[in-house]
Length: 384
Image (tube, rainbow, N blue to C red; front, side, top):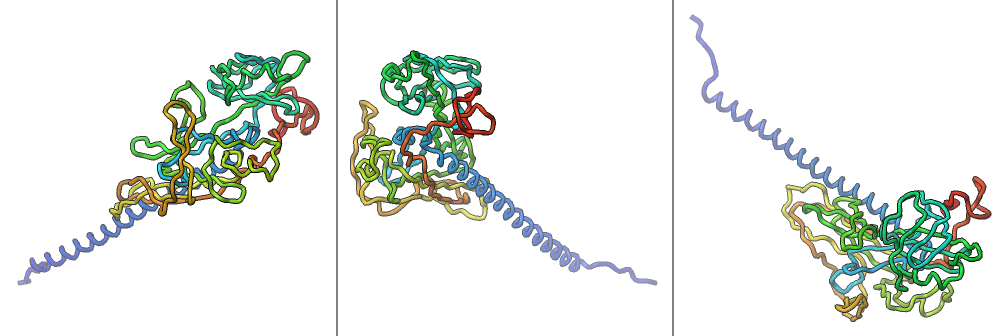
């Protein structure tokens, strides 16, 4: 009689253990691979966001000061500085003339500007406009008090007070702005780029405000332009490359100021010649393999002694005090464990700040050429 054969209990236990260990090993390897892939994908997302954001900001920053007085090219609203006494800021605000916009005014007064042709695009409330005499003999700024729709020939203005950007109360003091003599006045649009970091549901975004919309502390037309940008640092440099904190109270050099004049070396914003822009982007996903708390890195240079602006409680005027050198760069914000960061810092030459005269576009009535009078469509030839 043939004896029945099978596996013993010990053999079954051993084979089950081997199978379990094999499955456990494969599962662990798969989980490690998945976690590594997940982490690297998050890091690559942060790198891509940083690269694209840096290029966008730098491309716009290179145009800062085009078509506007150099001392007005950069702005320093409340909150632009960090709390520590070094040459760094959390916010970057600059202005430039939009090279794609031009129209002609036939009459200007403190309340309105009358255009020779209907607008081809909508201008929003708060838009800064620039009125320039033919030949750039003189110019003034104004701000819209209401939206101007496409097809409109009237711009309504915020009442002038003699200071930028509301200088329309001086229109009657500029000879070329009158309606007599058939003089025409160029009207340009001044764009504002206001970059800062905001958090939405604990996720950081780089925002750009346009300085448009209702006159409130919140810009309804501000927009997030990049995600996962967690830190933003700016440093301003003089002609010789030394860092400084711009002080709008210092006397501003004019286009006629000699190159070796003392006003070209003070702390007025007109003397900004380069800007160091530093950013830190965080990974879009957390690295669960680490529990390290990473502080946001600091950027930029220190000075032996720096000016710190202290806002006055009674007005927008600012007092200045001096504070000693900070001996160590430090971050100020902590993020959840496992956040990886990518840091980038670039120096941008702001060449328009070296302008020696107010630029005025060249126009043409003939297609393909850039000589002669004002074109029928009022657009700049080759962007000015």
